[in-house]
Image 1 (cartoon, rainbow, N blue to C red):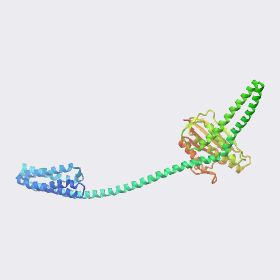
Image 2 (cartoon, helix red, strand yellow; image 1 turned 180 degrees about the horizontal axis):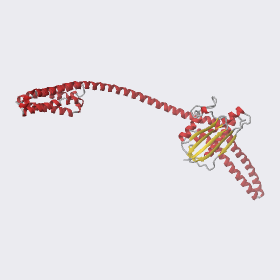
Image 3 (tube, rainbow, N blue to C red; image 1 turned 135 degrees about the vertical axis):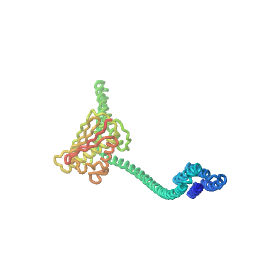
Image 4 (spheres, helix red, strand yellow; image 1 turned 120 degrees about the vertical axis):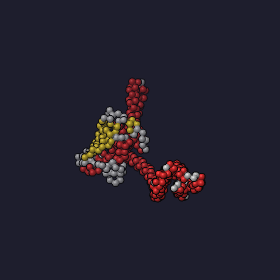
Length: 436
């Protein structure tokens, strides 16, 4: 019966060789598998002559099959053939057990000869059963691998598409960021253009003082020269003190004009995004008056009560002054626009009023810009901070002011903007900024 063992070795080697024929490792295993298969044939012929005891020959054949299985299972190239290799284990076991029993107790073997032969046949047949199953599994595995390859191609294509879309989106984001920066700069220049008359008015005041005190000082110098010519040094000294005071006033108002010009130049430039200690009262008062005179330059008949309630104990806070100044300027411009429109609509005894106040609340500074205009309808309160939304007629507003203000206060400075408005009575914009 040991011939089945040699047949199993030969068939296993040939089966593996055929399976590897169209693979990259065929050349590697072609010769070794041929040697194993045909070596089993040679071994059968040689040992049959050398060993006359069939039982010993059967045990040698079983050990040869076991050795082949052990060798092949150690090789990673045959990992996928594990089921086929393990199908030979029963034949090895049956061959060893049957041959040892025959060798030890031949009478016992003869008594159960049919049983032992059936065991041989069953173990040999099990190989073919597992081989059929293995073919199905190999076919299924091949189908899975093909599907896997298809999916990998699809994934690669989809990844390429996503990468392309990502790159396109990144380019779009860059364009949008560039456009946003341009829109911000245009909004700043537009607001600056509206304030041109207000700036001229504000500069004119300190320049008038400079001119007046200069003229007075010239007259005082002439009087001082006359008194010195008379020898009245006491009177000349008194006049010199007056001249000194005038020069101090000239310097004060000169710095005032210089500050207005610098502020406007800073307002027109791109933001530096550098936070610096800033007096909120100063920039609020500056832009408050500029916004008022800017509107008055368009309509000389417009007048309003300007009310300031500044907390004089307000500390310096770290902000990007030109950005926060732009927010305040936008709030003031909107407030004056609102009261002006209401004045034109109802007229009569209505008196426009705009108020700005500052105070400390806990660890925050609160700035309130309040007007007694027409108020904001409830239906649009949630929209007024959206980009390009405006209640002004076409051509009078970009709709960017409040949305940019929101970005500056909330996103850049970690503050808040709240709206308290009652339709027909007025609006209050409440800005809070952290002290630290």
